Image (cartoon, rainbow, N blue to C red):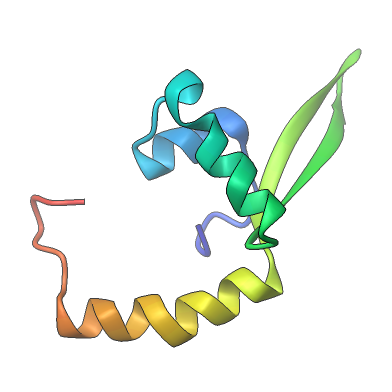
Length: 79
């Protein structure tokens, strides 16, 4: 998500390969744990929900996920 900055809910689900209805509790839990930030933005007459990685989320990526990826890199055909 770092290259994307902010994503709306549909973009976030698509980026993560998740189903919007089935996996929304995962996104809600990430918000509750402070790993991502949920906010609303005006969009025409309505509002759009967007997400971005929090500082805590960035720290976890640096401390846990980046070292894991260096040990066990993803193959090109696998996400």
